[in-house]
Structure formats: structure tokens, C-alpha cells
Length: 207
Image 1 (cartoon, rainbow, N blue to C red):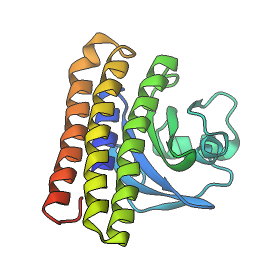
Image 2: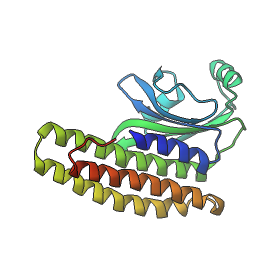
Image 3: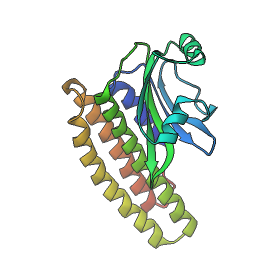
């Protein structure tokens, strides 16, 4: 999904992180859909959930901040190699299912706080909206009826309204100097959803 690239890029900018990534979660592993910045994994890379910080976020369905304090030897070794000293990961939830995650990282220790974590959850909510629409479009295509596509287009309109509400929530949760970048992120996401609706009308698959 193109919106995964948008979410990763703007999450990195808004949260002043060194790197950001969006993953897709499967039964026992996750794979990287989009990355932005430096010290980031390879797009398409696959990692087992077991024993990973992302795995703990998926298991608890709760966004979390991580750092080097109290980290195990494997984490410390990986941090020394990548230069990552702290970060956050939030689950992307669709109908109570964890379908993916979004995360940011920094070379500085304790770079993120609970306010930043709330903002990251907002980006996860954006992704959840897009993910849900992607699944609805796939279901509409499978049914192959015009009624199903019209219903999908209506969902896109409703989602765009939801994104506008989400943008107001996010702006209230982050510092003033990030508002312009955040507004750009929301606008880009909404534009992608609008293009998806137009592609439905034209009979083309959305990106």
C-alpha cells in the first residue's frame, strides 16, 4: 500500500526520528512494507515474532517505548551494530486484529515520551483506516458487483471524514512546531484515499 510509505515518512518527520518502518504481521512473523530514514531494515525483510520487541507489541496489542536500559545482550549487540538506542512501536488494529505495526527509532537514548507515543498511535490509526479500506476493496473485487464497489466508495468517503477528525486529535497531542508536518501527513493520506475512490469509479484497482 502506498499509504504505508506516506505513514513511515511522515511519522519519522513529525516525531523527529532517525528511522521509521511499517510492517505487516502474519501468524508467526512480520515483514517490512515500508521504511524511511537511516538504520532501517530492508523493505520486504521477514522477522520472526517470537523474541522480538515487535512481537511483544503484537501480543499485548499495546504501543510501547523501548530503550537500552535493562535490555538483554542480543538487543544491546544489535543496537551497537545499527546505532539504534531507543524507539517506539504501535500496533495497527483492524477489527481487533493486529494486521501490522508502525515504529520509529533514534540513535539517542530516551528520545521519545508518552506524548510522542500517542502521536505514533495516531499514525497507526491512519494505517488502520487505509488497511480496512484495502480489505474492503479486495472483498468487493471478489464479489465482482457494482453494488459492492459503490459500497466501497462510500466507505472511502466516511474514512476521509474520520481522518479529518483524527488530524485534529493528533495536532492537539504534539508540540506546535510539528503541526505543519503533521498537517501535510494527514493531507497526503486523505489525498491517497480520495484517489482510491476515483480509481474505484474508473474500474481500476487502487494503489
